[in-house]
Length: 96
Image 1 (cartoon, one colour):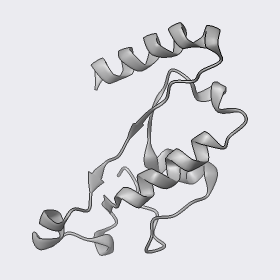
Image 2 (tube, rainbow, N blue to C red):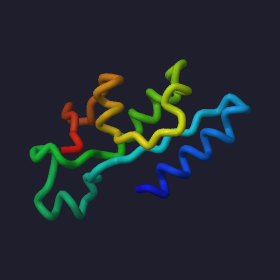
Image 3 (cartoon, helix red, strand yellow):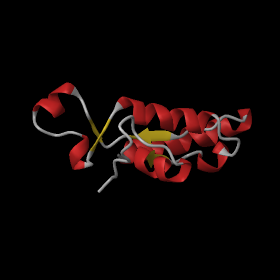
């Protein structure tokens, strides 16, 4: 994770002159078929779908103040809380 943090920070610094923001999205535990087959799903509150990550991308792309987040690696759950979106099943998987 340290490499992702550092890379995001350096990218943000280099791209700032071009008015481009760099934010790393960090999903936690993806709800893939294999994970569901192993008995984990939305009921446990620990898994998230690719749509959850996609909603974070949309909100970041439409945020006029995204530059304030530039240089950070942010967990999707943190953005869900800040922007108020949920996963496709209405849950808001958390990092804990």
